[in-house]
Length: 493
Ligand code: ADP
Ligand code: MG
Image 1 (cartoon, rainbow, N blue to C red):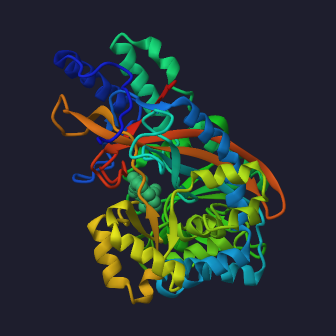
Image 2: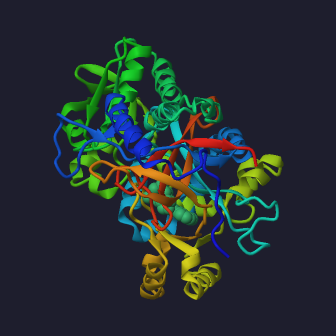
């Protein structure tokens, strides 16, 4: 049976001349409204090029979208509780820590900070829960009992550090609205949900800043050596500066933080003579971003300080794949959430997640994956895309690691198969018009949570982003050049 498919918002294909014309307009709209990225091949700070985008919004079932929006504060709170449960994090990560040096180093920072006594009990979480529609139902071959081309959505992962696209999410809605108007279909825009992600995320930073309560304090964005995804990051700065002209923002790499900051006797992080109120990490989630001990020292200094961190180190640990897998194990959600209705709703969003520890469950998981590798994704404790293994590579890796402790650094996850959609994907430097291709989408829901271990001060859902990739591609990172910006067109099925 062929893969399920969702109906496009307009009958396709479009007339060739109309298509060429509207793409030319849309590309200029993109450049003039920050739908852009820096060019990786010919890097210059003097120019941006269009970010890849899908010309028309991709269909997404309205009820499933509503469910994702509704569930976000519940997921925020769950992550907050997990991040503050030292025993759970320790027991969940212990095997992975033995073989995964990066996670072990993050964990060491956390241990040191705790041993000195926490100076800043409040954390700022800016989370993004990534989900995909599942077109396979367990009880029927490839076709859902509801006779819709999907069953429900499943969570791919939840990001707790550097959850990007707060700007690129909302602006994707704007560019596709422009395209729909140019095509004479402005009436369809009402099916595209409002998206105030940038405003909501920046309000989180501002709220944390005000909680810090020092009028001369500054905000620090921790950035990569080279930021390709510059529009997304800068628009956060522009938004904060519009809302609160009094707040000064610095962008610094971990290396610069090492050289340019100090802790004073009150454990304030001092930058340019002022205390830092909020540290917002857009870097620091992968090993290459810590090329020397200086970067680790800088990270430790920030974590030891009174600055409110987004995220603080325990939130980053709570966002690991291993924790996601542990939450899906029997009884664990109940421990954090009790036995009520919400617990069942969260359990429903998990697809099969399996530990590869050296015990009976781990052995069973290895056997299961070797028997049908295409059904699974093998994931190490990494963020940022491009680290997971699929299909034949799952098999090869498991055969290689089967008797090695290394395997405990991975989790096994059932592969989600989303319904297909037809789309024109506009890419920089690519032929115009692009071919009409089969794509699949991944929706990200943003949440903001502020609080300490015992008290949550703010918890809300603030917006969304949609990324779309070719149906046959394994991963769809936009910054990595695989995916494309998109936004949902809500369908009543
Ligand atoms: P990362 O932290 O590197 O972003 P993810 O778990 O989000 O890791 O995986 C990266 C990408 O791989 C996802 O955006 C998605 O496109 C694909 N992917 C991950 N897990 C699954 C899955 N279980 N089923 C289908 N695709 C997946
Ligand atoms: Mg991801």
